[in-house]
Length: 407
Image (cartoon, rainbow, N blue to C red; front, side):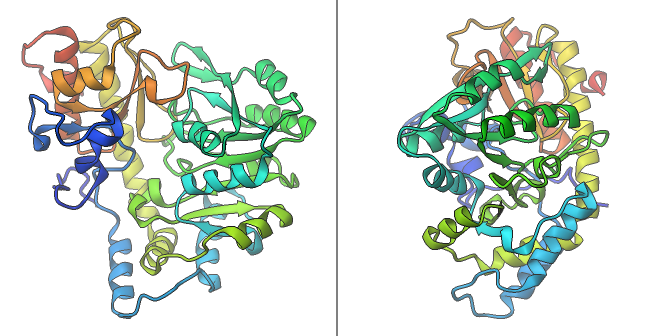
């Protein structure tokens, strides 16, 4: 039994969550002041968890530390591949040859490289909006034009506009689709029929596709992730990105799995990428894939309860908010259009008025105004206080909320 109710103090660890919020959310420095001390904020923003990593991970890191030498390192041995591919077989019924696996110190750095390798200067990158902002940033960084296809909001459950997507994919200058599966920030787990429709468009238009599947292990317990590679087993122009970072709270370990099918693109990657890996990261990730499943099962059950709690609490105390439980991720996507005008800076409002750090729809490219994204991967007591502060700030009702009413 793991203790996900434990509150861990992350201050003085150089954590982005505690020390980097001014620069990331507000593009400001330490001179930006709030009515709250930094340690008084409820942090529901950056997508890492407030939970300790599994014991099997910390034990593996300690064992690797005992080797006492940390020189140049790469994933040479087959044990890492076997641990990861076995994970994919068990959970998704999907596998891939060892030669296709290359390593990156993050999915974001991989996106930045791959856009450059795939797209010529006059070619375009396509993605679905609202979108994880780094899809756009990867295009911007490489001076490539980007094209957005807005998802259809069906009362909080999003769907792909296949007609619009096909029209934009059919532009001869659009050569790359960056696809988020499961989707961030909406939390959709794309179903088999949706993925087949998507695959048909990809094959018809000959797109390269990067399938960012970093959230794939964090589904609600009644949901099943399907890798795009399982739907398109022979399509050569597919790159799949997975990582232990979100699953096991290892983002700071900076290690990700990039599965490149095309021999030519993989050769470009291997010839240009600075291809070394952190020895502690390898040990941590391999242990997680080998022995971390019991921890993950309990984590997902805890997250499911956090989502149920959030839905009940918002329905009672912020009834005009639009919220559906995400099918995956630990991120809640909440529509607050009924309470704010479209020009309101929601991250700033909640930082000043509630002492809650969160990300607003303005951080998700477009088709997201009036939304906030809440990180629910925190102890229940922290979640309760965060939601209480949010509701108080929005409604002005300072009456003490009875938390038991939301359970």
